[in-house]
Length: 186
Image 1 (spheres, rainbow, N blue to C red):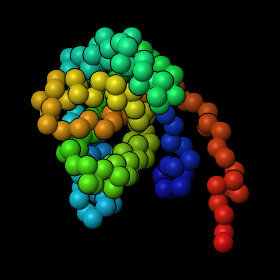
Image 2 (image 1 turned 180 degrees about the vertical axis):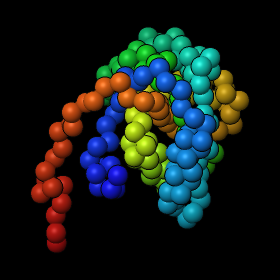
Image 3 (image 1 turned 120 degrees about the horizontal axis):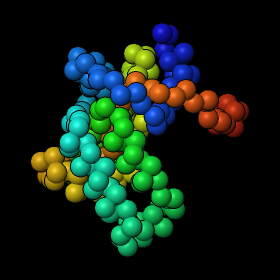
Image 4 (image 1 turned 90 degrees about the vertical axis):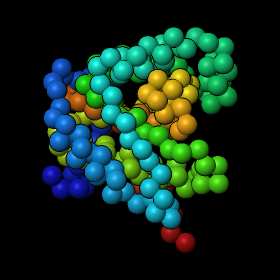
């Protein structure tokens, strides 16, 4: 697939077939993420692949904390509607969940987060290229410390997660702003 075609065809997939994914394919996704540019070549990412029991435990942690006062306050601060129940269901359904972590380093926070965003996008585009679906997940933010502890990385910050699987849906493109709405020449 040509790159621009891959970019145009990438969708957020929320329904997956119950089909295993070969370890080599997942390693290929992470290899593509590893090749992403990073600020000062810090390569601040750590990728942890979870399946089956641990993946379901992560979803259960999210559901358990769903109605806590702290989570509801954070949602209010971020002006975010609750999609945790839906996201937990997606996590349980997807065969693979990739957790993306970084070291705690306040001095490099912005550069590291931008770099990790690039690495995640590499994963999502390569997944599309290989006929896989992906969903870039933010909802883990409310339970990031609990999830990091579960997987033995409580000394690192869980930034995001990505569900991966063979798509069992074909969503239409989401509306995008026109080029002239986002581009200005000076």
